[in-house]
Image 1 (tube, helix red, strand yellow):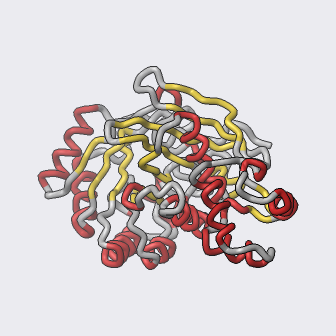
Image 2 (cartoon, one colour):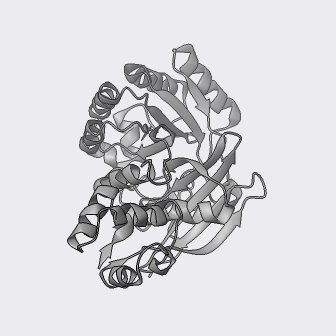
Length: 341
């Protein structure tokens, strides 16, 4: 059986023609799946009963099941635990801002990247998610709150560029004007720095924001925090960022987790400023969020502000991220596999 929710409209038209149906049936089915967000073929009432039965026999509609929702007492952030069709679980986070609803989704069950400060990588990776399973996280949250989701960040569990084909298909589907039509300018993809895949992404000419998990200003410190740095040097990463900017015209963001005693010195700030200026990147400072297994502590507020001041004195725009959902382990670096099959 085929995963009908992962087809784009062109592919769905080809499927319908292969069944001897008129191509307009594809548009009807696509609307049911991606606008009306139905979860079964019987709800597609403008299709004949015969066609619905055939669809049931040859295709399936991917559904995820909401197992748990935690709501932050501090800021109202909602963290969802979803069960996938095979019993694996992922977490997603809804954050409400004055400019709209933002959802952080997972792209893999676990993560193979091994970043020392991140809970998602504990236990490694189980598998990558299909486009339909990424869509479902947004669709279920949309139905739960009965409000439109306007921004999506692919920054939950997993390394998105380690699931390149499915993630890029997801971007195509979520931004399709025939579906939820979330602007690509409101989509952010976060990567720890897979250099070849950054260049492949650039060649697709998406209008998304690319966020690079930097977390150190030298190769030596980055290797101590992020195993990917043993494969790709900072020079290689910055060259890939330049390629991305040249191809897309989209300004990059550097994500930088400030860890007490690890990467928060004045010299660290100057090194990061030098890297950011090479690609005109914005730096998003993130006082590291607590994860029991890592033992890392956030930089103290004075050190955070001092780091920011040095960046700005060196001509680099920066912000300190307001972390939402920390009390429910829903903030950056805190998402993890809660249940395993």
